[in-house]
Length: 306
Length: 306
Image (tube, rainbow over all chains, first blue to last red):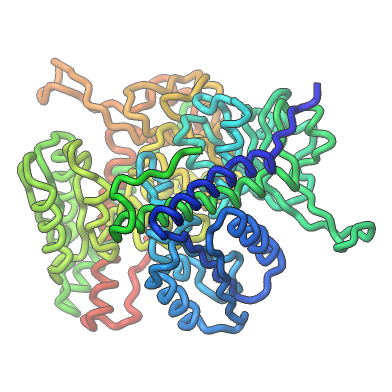
């Protein structure tokens, strides 16, 4: 039986619509316009493409999105000063540092410069630390990990007690997803490039989340029949047939796995759009918290949950 | 074939001997006496017993150990002020907040009050966050987790590529051990009270670390023959035969598992003494860093590795 394909674009559209209503309300009733700044160092193509999706969705929702671009050779001091200036700007409620940074910059030091209250991508070491503990309360959670959990909830799978396998241990996806699954009482196994017999491990998964950055890594015979498979991979694979010269492939062999899994997210159109929606939701949350703290909003103003 | 029993006390003694030599050198050549303060709120018996072991070993090594006791009903403000005063005291290089704290205190807020440079137990959310990421560089790592890794190294097991199962997801043991095993390239599964078919999971482990707080939880038939089993549990079980009214039992059924495992740590005398040794090593490291920063030690002074 073929898997149910989870339509991430449709789910994202519904979230964005809700956010647009909230933003309109904040503007008309309180004059508060949520602001998000993307800090980009150098010209990494995939992060630029990602930033364009963010900008498009932000505009759709009514969030003021702007980009602060620094040359690849910008000094660490200049980058840190840029971030500090944005921290101090009351018109900006959220900051995203586009990753990867050029390798010679100290990523954790840069991420730690973002004020935790504006860290809408949840990558400040302090927010990561609070997420990585059983009952810590991070101010924000990395949006890709949030998107994965949102899609799991949409599939109706019970996380509590499930065997979950996460392939990939990145700071931005694999690890935060593992922590969220663990908080949801799944029994979580984290696999990576040094895992022996990957298929033997992934076949045990009721929930399989793949964020390895390897196109087509997960084949049909590596999936337990009926499992929920969330494909976080977005790989640009050269393709002469395509106008843009490449096509996007996930980490999952879609054709094979859709015959085995119970639920499956496509690439593109799966995790990606929901990630952007979560980032914007976090930005709205940040704006509401900062607006309440500044007395612009009533102190008990709440973001309506999606 | 019976397991090799890893003698934690003997391993700890060797570490302590090395530390004593270092401390003597710091004192005689630079007049620097490493100082460690234990902050205790209320009268939790097991943390008091743990603190006594710390005090004894610290004295043996030449580290100045003192205890700051607050009444159980001490206000959060008073506790935070106590910690800030210790932060500011240049004679003190390390601070341990004895856990558990009374439940009405906000543990993460208290741990976050310790200056990260003196956080020798590695429990500041920032240090936890840096540990919880693949390549973050925490200033200190929780000493129990360090002890587990040290004992694994002593057993000669190869962590890279191994299947590791951690039972228990506490902030102080289960999670940091998982992160360290992951950094060592093990494929790690974290089990807990909501895990279904625990034995089915633990039987897959080449390395089994148990920190569940349940005496005798791991039976012989839950262990893969030849596995390395590290028992972090220390449970006080009432025993009328004993002078002190109880005896200490681990989370592993020792009699059964020693017939199956390849290596096994006993309780008491396994992880416990090595944990104390690691805490003191961290204190020495803190003293050296702070001494170097203050110009008391040469800036390139290094702690000799054990």
